[in-house]
Image: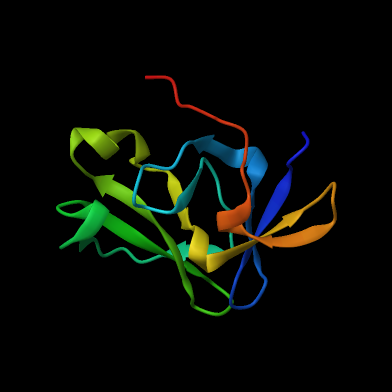
Length: 123
């Protein structure tokens, strides 16, 4: 694939995942990359958080952290309204918390500046 990338933690450059695991388009207002899988360096607490504002208002989710440096890198949605239901159980990486290494071009780029091919989950 033309735009194969590896996702790194912005804080310490630990590998968190890659573009081969991308499985959906980001919902408006969230700024996330949605993946089926993550590396073992991505951890989460057993306690659920509840969104009190913004796009996750009323949603229950687990925060994802980089095991190496502790930076919060995303979330796993546990419960939500029907508009975000397709994200439940998936790894949602905050674009602001990760850096992408594009394999073919051998360059490092902000995740928010990469346009990955459209991927959609089947209902």
